[in-house]
Length: 485
Image (cartoon, rainbow, N blue to C red; front, side, top):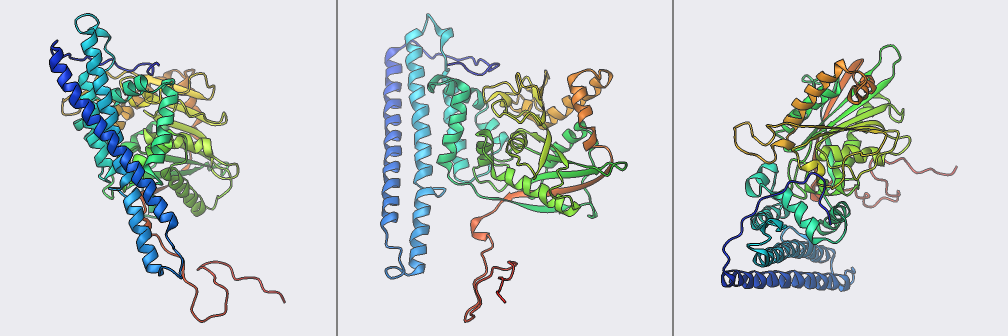
């Protein structure tokens, strides 16, 4: 099985030729891996047992009171799919068992080929250690802690290389197929995600308005600012411009990327959002971004008018933008242009009516994690790959494997590209930018929204029917029932 094009090779170190030393380590690893597999199997068995018990509980009013029934159901849900429940324990135990099994295989290979074929070892021991460190980060994410790229960089700096090599060597099919299946399987394991709600934070009448953007380049410059949100929510910008001569409007939606890898982190751009977007499904944050667009269109009085929309996004935001184009329904939101920065979207096919610009840093491993080059062979896609020699150096001078993925790097490099192509109007980038001029020319009105997960317990419950009345129940805001004359 092959790894995605461009995946970096990682050096490894072999420790000592002593067979007895390696055998002792292997026996410990095998025993520990077997223990974790047993734990995972037991969790799975207990999970099935608890659900069987729940299915057979007499949740009828003549057997249990409503309060008792609710308490039983809540306890069962906490035990099965809660943050510290059986499903989370099973996932963690399975991950540990898989990494330990792979570690055993690595040491066995090392012993077999030591001294002769050392250079051919597929997975180095230090990469296995990266996997073990990453499991600690995954455990924190499952438990609900906010885990961002800085945390992964600190705890497991070779995480992406590890994922690529483990998936390439362990799973049976082509890499791109396996990684997509892995996303889908993880969605099942993490359960139903929390809904992401929208909150309008500024509009054209606000005292402090969001700055207008007048080009793709300027929109790229807004994304780093959208990451800076003290409310710990995904901050997005919506803009409408109106051509003063024709009265035709056009819309711009700007999306940041992942802010936390916790599955249901408060910020809408969380771990579940990544999984759903990568699997090509509508993520909660995609639904929320559509809601924000519809709210802005309603305020402008153009709902259903089909005004064109360009969506720009970094990382997860780019996956969301791509999926919005894929999922659009005629008569709703008319997405005609998409721009992504560092997003793994090669496996996501976009309708030919939507023009796509995929911008990539050659040193960034994230955009190739799906194993497919972005837009190869698709006539409606333009792919720009730039080389930034300083991409692996953080602003403080330290080595940072994720610096190449930062939107600040993408902003600086794309803005330089945009300047360069102005003298080459025949270039594909220049032609793409010319096709987007309608989104940035005219009178501009801006909106901003916060996107945050909604705790189900805080959701507004429907009104209860008034007691002692003969009128049929009508939720607040519903039309009065028709009466025959």
